Every structure is written in C-alpha cells, then in structure tokens.
Length: 340
Image 1: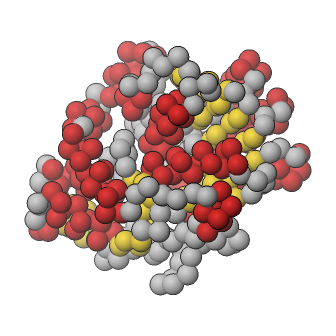
Image 2: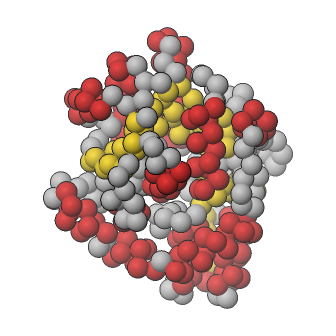
C-alpha cells in the first residue's frame, strides 16, 4: 500500500505522516512538500530514516512534475494536506492561495484520475462554511459561504473534489476540521504565538475584542479521524471533524498566561482582521456515529500537553524565529527552497 501525503512537512501534515509511519509499518508513506516558509523538515527528523518513509520536494501546482511522479510511483491513496492556510496572508496576497489551493488540487485530481487511485482524500477546513451566530453548528449539509480569500480557495478546491467524484467517478472523501493545535504548530498561529511571546515576556496581540469563538481540535485527534475516513469513509462523503471545545480567543490567551504564570498585562488588543468570522463550531456526529471516532483530548488536557511541548522543545521554535530551520532545508536540498 503506497500513500502520497502532500504538505507533509507542515503542521497537520507532519503529525499525520508520523502517525501513519508509526502505526502502519507495512505502508509506504511518500511525503511531497514544496518547503515554503511553513514547511519544516525538522518536524520529521525522528522518522526521516524510517524504512517506510520517503520525502520528495515538489510543487503540487507543477502539472508536469505531478503527472510524472504519479506515473512513476502509482500511488494507491492520495491525501492532500498541502495548502496556504494563514488568513492574514491571504488578504495581502491571495494569488498564491489560488495557485496552491485550487490549481494545485486540480493537478492532483487529474493525476489521481489518470492512474486510478483507490481514494483521494482532501483535508479541508470549517472556514468554508463561513461564520455562525451565538448558536448552532456546522454540519456536512451547511452551505459553503467562505468569507476570506483563504477559505474561498479551500471551498473552491472542495468543489473540484466533489466534481471529480460526480463527473469522473473518482473515489474521494473530504474532511473539514475545526482549528487544530498541538506540537509543531507554526509560530504565526494563535496558540503557539501566544505561548512563545509569553515565554519571552512580549506583547500578546489579540484581534478586536477577543471574543471570536473557535472550536479547538488537538492535532492527534485530527490524525486519528483522517485515518478512519481513509480506511472506512463512504465513497464521496464529507466528514466534519470537531473537538467540541469552543473557546473565545481571549479565553485561550488567559488560559496560556495562567499556566505559564505570566501577567495579563502582556495582552494588547489590536485592530481586528478584515472579514474576521465571529464563531465556528463543528457538529461531528456523522464521524462519531458512522466511523466510531472519539477524541482523546479535551481542551484542558490538550492545551497542557501543548504548552509542555513548547517548553520542552524551545530549540525547535527558536530555529523558526531565527530562520535557521531554512538552513536545514538548504543543506539537504540546495538553495531552491521557497522562503519568505
């Protein structure tokens, strides 16, 4: 069994690669990543020499490269984690989000269709559903209503996946997750940013009034869910993955400060993000009832584990902040590494 995992050097992708390499030694796991700024091979140093793991550097939007790779490797399963994912960056530079998230997905779908994969699994986001009021939850039947260039590009890629199933009979699943957190989370995102800034006694920027609500999902629980959908998901179905851990942003910040014994005076409210969705919340009933998924972590245990990981792995995040992690890329793959 040969699996292609795209974006496997990023946060969620690297956690999934490690999970699969460890759990399924009989599978061959191929990690394809372009090593843009958020891709970090140091995330996978502990398994880089595993006999069932291979890394390949490449761009999913490069059709010639993708087609040649698929014809050579004849993958059984394709799991697409590769995506530009930071909302703020999508506001200032939407072009790269369209290229990677839409054109890249299209290139993968065409190649997967050509070789006849057993399943193509698209890892998406709850942000494609838009925003919620104070009540209610996103289900798999919620209409898509993306509000940022990032979420619009993810919604577009989801629709392409659906279209390739309906038009060409390509076996597919789509998973849509709530906000992930956990080890190896890139420092520009909320939870690692707050942990790292607090450890350095730096200001903690909080958008608007800090009352935007997110449903937090530990990345290990997300990996388990994707594993279940890959092996047991019904062809053509969408599965929502949510942690059922709703918290406001300011609650998150204050929880981290309390655990690190840092003062709330570090908090600084800043101008709100353009088009900032107010609330996300996932209904994961379908995943739980049809596939038997149950998360391992609640938020209290998950955030404690995450904070401890950042405390115990300071060299990892210090290398990112300094830019030294990019030197590791170059030592392995030369100067043709996409960095910002």
